[in-house]
Image 1: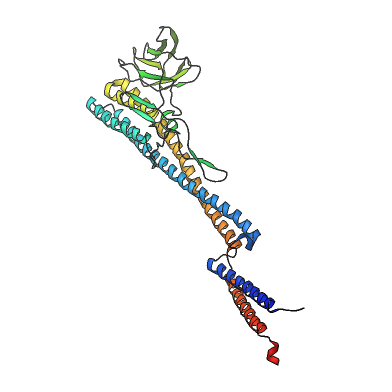
Image 2: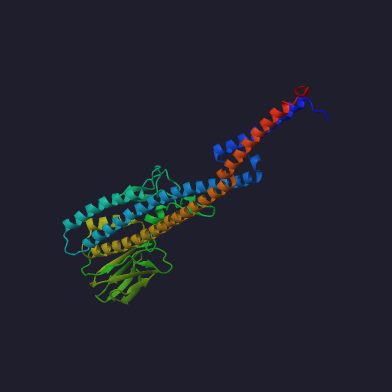
Amino acid sequence: MRISTAMLYSNGTQGFQDRASELMKIQSQMASGKRVTTPSDDPISASAALVAQQAKSINEQFTTNRANARDALNVVDTTLGSVTDLLSYVKERAIQAGNGSLNKGDLQSIAIDLRARFDQMMGYANKSDPEGGYVFGGYRTNDQPFVGTVSSGVAFFGDQGSRAIQVSETRVIPTSNSGNEIFVNIPGINASFSTSAGAANTGSGTIDAGSVTGNYAGGAYQIRFTSATDYEVVNSGSGTQVSTGTFSSGTPISFGGVQVTVSGAPQAGDSFDIASGSSADIFTTLKGLIDTLENDSGAALTSKVNQAMSRIDKTLDNVLSVRASVGSRINETQALEAMGSQADVQYRGTISRLMDLDYAQASSDLAQRQVALQASQQAFVQTTGLSVFKYL
């Protein structure tokens, strides 16, 4: 085979380029710290690393979501803690008001204090989050959920929605509770009718808030004591006698689908009224307590204060229940965060194993490529230096 000078130079140049390309590739890998710099370097590893990187990116988004959920839940938890403290304080003031030794001025002072606490409760119910949205408005975060005053009463303009954030592939966690659940629809409070003691009562009898036990169709009733031990129940509208009985303090009295309990020692001529319509929200409870302290006295005052304390207790139980739920969700986000951190470490390890460079091996390969390039250069010099004229 005839080997031309052009072929010698072409093959030598190609050898230089191949060795130099190999050397530059290793130098590039060492500079970047990556074994796979392009998919063509290792298609299988590059594909697997892409899948791991996508999973890592999703996990990072869930990490952000968990942080946002935890921040939102902490706002709810802190606010409910303040509501709990306020309800406990209001209960203490109600207990003080139930002390029969207080005069009208003392009751008025407590009422003034409770008016301030009413406004404070409104502030908690209309709490805003760091983004300016109302925490307890449900989905209606831009609309003030609770509007009103002690005089006018309070109306709820939010909805019953609960905002949520996806914090893992399989878990969507609620980050809020509707104000309706916390402040309005209080479990255990009778919202069908109200009870009150007659203003002219002379005995020490009091009546509780009562409860619905059957098919209460509305309507007003009055329990009239014909003696200290006997009573009759009369339909206030028609004047028809509904039932009679012998009184025993603390024993429930049932009629018309409702049940009430009279305690203490009522006297002949005392009466207790049952009127349809009531509300279970905390603002109605506070308003009723304030009105009682400002206007009532005697047995009527005692009955209404006792009813208010019962409603406050149920409201406090409800707030504590909701707060426990919020606390469990905070704990869940923390547990998921720990799992997310572990997953992130695993994804990083997988990507590193597939893509990162083994510097020890790369250093050895670099030395080999440098030797190969030098050898190629020397071989080219020797080959191109061959000439028949040297032997003539």
